[in-house]
Amino acid sequence: MRIAIVGPTFPYKGGGAQHTTELAHRLSAQGHDVVIESWKAQYPGFLYPGQQTIDAPEGEPFPRTHRRLDWRRPDGWVACGRRLRGADLVILAVLSPVQVPAYLGILYGMAGRTRVVALCHNVLPHERKPYDRPLMKALLKRVDGVLAHSEQQAELARTLTDRPVTVAAMAPHLPAGRAGQNGAQVHRKLLFFGIVRPYKGLDLLIRALPEDVGLTVAGEFWGGIEETRALVQEVGAEVDLRPGYVAAEAVPGLFEQSDALVLPYRSATASQNVWLAFEHGRPVIATRVGALGDHVTDGVDGILVEPGSVEALRTAIERFYEPGEPERLRSGVKSVDPEPFWSAYVETLLRG
Image (tube, rainbow, N blue to C red):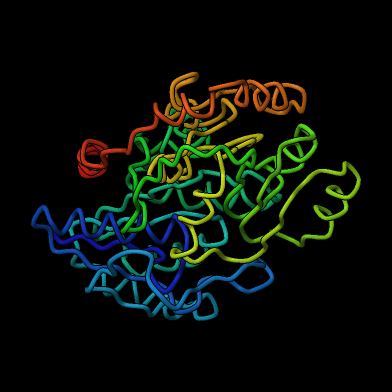
């Protein structure tokens, strides 16, 4: 098949770009003729306050990549659609409703001449704006099919379109070169990793920290860091704030100096961070939201807790630090095998 994936890839960073790139490699390895149509300017800066691009790739770049899309150039959206008229399948990687105008321009240029699937990382954002739902509805009713990463997300998509909606669990797309670290030392320090946004519950975690447990927070702060600094000072917690994008070579050290990764999310769809922690030999303390509860086995390789509660999170942390528990949970951590996930994912995508 001739397949085009429209979405972010290197030099854009993060899980969405890594997923687009890995998906292209997987489809190409199956013998398909694959191209990525990507961005030279994806979002206006005021809509994405963090660092958008990186200098070094987080995995192997896909060779057949064109970076011609620009959020400021609607004529380029239509031209992209015209180029894709000869494809057998076009996959639109949907990470935000902000992309919808460009995708509608691409669909206009295609003139309905090929099959289109919207691959929704999130059907709607965790923190929603009034325009999110109408934009996504406008897109999803114009494609031939929708792929969601959970049944909950699929049900949400079905409220926006009458087109077929299929479900495939998010497959691992971790940067290359990871290795588990299983040192025996207990640091009494936890790790919060990744972009800091309200739905991820960092404020709950800071309030939940026992007096003798520290926390490292490494990642970009969405909308500023001052509120977090004020909260740390208010509660008197031992928190090491490391704002900014974390380069791949710095990630192993963060996990080596921590006992567990904590994901105190208020809501979630899917996250690579559980698997990232496992690749570095660290258990995970996570809330039962989205797919987190599917990836963490309570009492084996981590601890699961109900979302939204400071008290429940503190109890989970205290449980984690009972004598011998950090070592026991660390011994239960196993690296993820990506092959079964990707095999099922690609099969569902091509069939749906």
